[in-house]
Length: 155
Image (cartoon, rainbow, N blue to C red):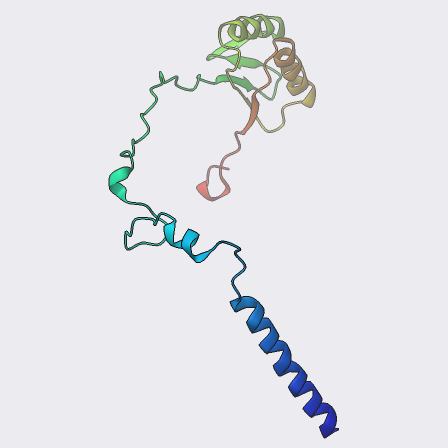
């Protein structure tokens, strides 16, 4: 077993010697005169950078000005337990609601809708209001929970 060990030690040393010779041998076919005549990079004390004097000064990007457009005010719709619909603090019918929503959509197409409804409101009433919003092509609809907070004591 010691013969195998001696063989592998000698074989490893020979491989290391061979690799070392390959790494240290110059691979360039240029003559030493051509290498000496090559221009040298200016020394800057930093690796991989040229002299800062030869570069153009950096320019910061100029700010782009845009006119500020505030978010459109939400259309607030309130549904009562009895099926009544309120818009802008006034009671409206379903047909009036659809006409007003169509007019509002024409003026501001991306205006959001807040749909608030009381606990116990029939689902058919909610569905009818959603259909009116859809007919007016309003798609940004948020359901707002109007139940009092459990920790507030207003139950």
